[in-house]
Length: 186
Image (cartoon, rainbow, N blue to C red):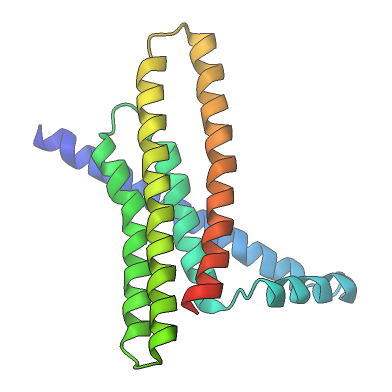
């Protein structure tokens, strides 16, 4: 039992490391693409306008990378029945701890009461978004558990459908998270 536990733990850690490296390679590729001289200046200006509009500074971008990586890992791990659901939940909620630390850094500095209440409201909204994500993962886990008895072709199609719908919903929730974070917590 102990050996299986450590094998599962190592598998989860390797998933985490793999996706963080994948996200870093993607960000490096985007940076390389934008720094090439072949890219027209118009594209770079369009990117800068997009960057300014959505206020993607270093803090928001780093939290966004952590959230997206943990969300993708959770969506992949929930597809593997050998990994207990508690590990998936642990990985999913681990990115919420980064939110907690960011909020704690912001409330250490005394501010006006209205601004502190706005930041608390933003943190509670982000926590509510995380609960929506948790219930979505729980539903997906239960659905995959029930799909296991289906024939292979039907089970494959059902899993793909669940994965695609989950990615769309997760993308929407990440966009909502970004807007709430920029408007209320920044």
